[in-house]
Image (tube, helix red, strand yellow):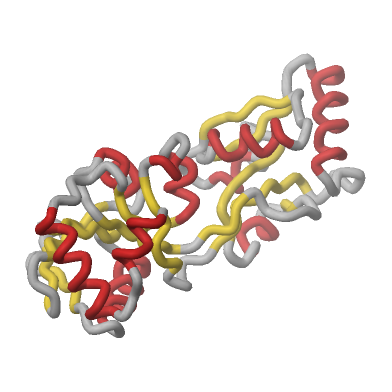
Length: 238
């Protein structure tokens, strides 16, 4: 049995169901929203596992599911050296968002990471502690700032409304996912004028840690043929 993990609710679930359905594979819930039960029509041997988008990277890395749909950002953030544990198979074309760094609009002299580094150094001298950047993406943000020479800061955890942390005086800047930038603008924040840390979208991933026995490989081949995608080839070459 090949296990396919997909998001359990919301637009991401609906869009995933639509994406598979348009390729001849029906995904459906078989219970209430609280039961997280589902079924697959169109290909025998596929078991549907409904999980939160944040759980899917962990399940892929542990090999408890063979395939999973989740955001690129979650895989890159939650799985160290992710390429060794999962294979990126197919970008699905929805759920697009950028992981960015934003600062208060009133910081008129801060437009780049170099400016942020200088501002952070001044901030520590003036206030006696490091400039705080609120984020859920500690691994990605730390690596990005390290690679770009920004040193005098601290990351503070934000699991709620990250953009509101500056107004609430619990951070001086934020690093978060955004698709339109409207929430940032509403909270009087601006993007640094550089490329985002990561461009993310919903993606179908394959687990390198799952038990790819003869049966599950045969099911993957059938799924590939049904959807007219080279999933089997991608798992071999990734």
